[in-house]
Structures are given as C-alpha cells and as structure tokens.
Length: 116
Image 1: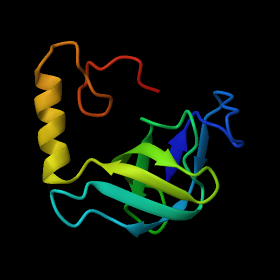
Image 2: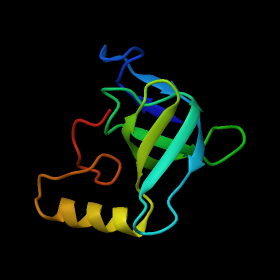
Image 3: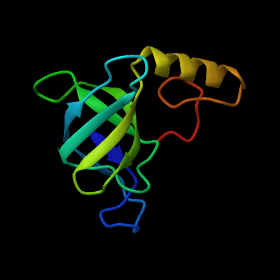
Image 4: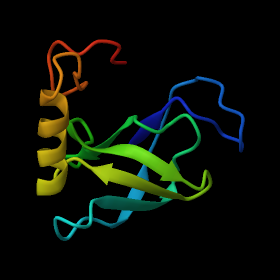
C-alpha cells in the first residue's frame, strides 16, 4: 500500500494525500540491497518521497505494517522504496537518529513531530 502527498501528472504535485496498492516484484536479499521495487497499480510520484509504504498482514487488509519509505518512481507503474527491515536500514536509522536529540523519526519515536 503506497501513500503520499505527490501528484498524478509529471511535475504537478497538489499536496493531496493519495493511497493505492501496488505489487512487490523485488525485495531486499542482503545487507547491500535495500530496495523494494513495486510495479502495477499505484506508483510513487514527485512529493511522495519520504512517505510510508505498508504491507498488509491479513487477507482482509485490516492490519498493516510500515515496511519502507518512498524513494522514487516513474509516476505511471514502477516505484523504488527504501526498505526499513534490512540490517543495513535498521543500523543506519538507529545511528542517524542517535546523533542528535532533534532527529526523531515518525513511527519510530513517540515524540516525533509533524507526522501525518
């Protein structure tokens, strides 16, 4: 499930929240490959970068977990997402956020601000 405040046309971000489903075609296999690639259905657009992408945990699509952060896409059918579940991602997030008390990550820190 991709979500973000991007666009539906190249270069025309309007700030509206959009949510849509896409199919995972590739996922991380090691600590050096940190991308999830989706194709079909929704696609990441300008303005969506940094937004969450979720994986449904049940057939009814009632439960979900954030698995990545939107990185880039071609607007029409393919998205490249930065995984949050690899050892490399976990290590980076912990190290980066510990370097300053002001670095708070939505969904990771309960005192993060500006989360939508």
